[in-house]
Image (cartoon, rainbow, N blue to C red; front, side, top):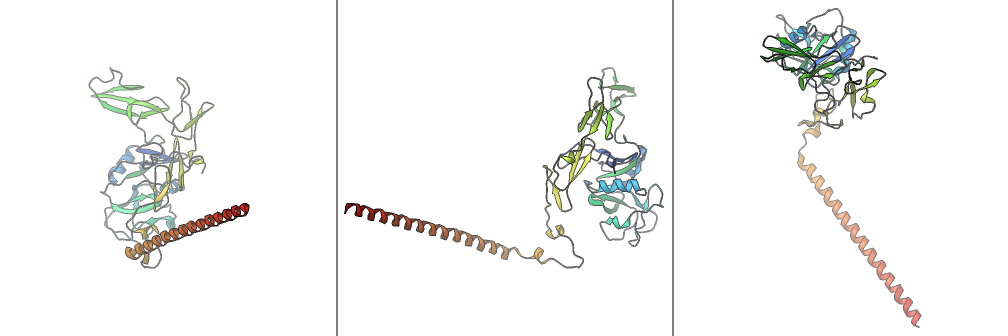
Length: 352
């Protein structure tokens, strides 16, 4: 578990915590899962993974299962994995994978099927594929739909970063448009970066310091530099574990260079890292479901009786305050009269 998290995804988009990247890897040793935030259909997502020497995520290995278990707890949306229902057969609810097949890898390795949570109990027919969402829920959906993103498995730690970015320009590299390296190409030019840098997402012509691991050599052309979220120590950049110092309300995942707060089911993440109960038109959905097919009486009760209870309680409280106030005022007046009478009697005694 020491190297389980190499770097997590697109950190807390709603909370604004961490880096806003469209793709970031989560690694254990040389095995990585990349979280990609591009909205694509299943076939397009599969093509993107393969074009970068990867595959849509399959879960036949212990390493990928372990990474996925940590990652799935905090996924911000629905992400394709490499499961497709193909051929002429419809899904079979009695089978662990319901008849779906992995798009790559060996079929021999089995998952811990008790840990698989299907969103729906329904029979579907091809072409259907599977996406996963927060807390590891599996959803069957048409392969032509666009999910929020997709998960790739790869052994390439720099999977998410383009080495060169193409720009269309008839003058090419003559004007020196790139901060570090420029290569002329037909109809334009490509910018790239030195080792230890990657293109800046806000301006691909420029480069920023980058470390895809927990510990990287610092970049020392003009004073030693480390990426944000890292600290320099004897010529090395070491990741800062923000989860040890930052107060996430429910859960925190440290990433290389940042961190990510997430909430338990039924809660919504706020900008300060706190979790609040999610707004819902069906409050019963926030409760733990019962095994019996019953309806909670409280969820369907009319609002009128409860309103009158609050009104009566408020009137009673106001009346109590008024009575207490009157009692205090009267008691104070009696004390003042008693004090005046005692002073008058003392004066008469002195005169006599």
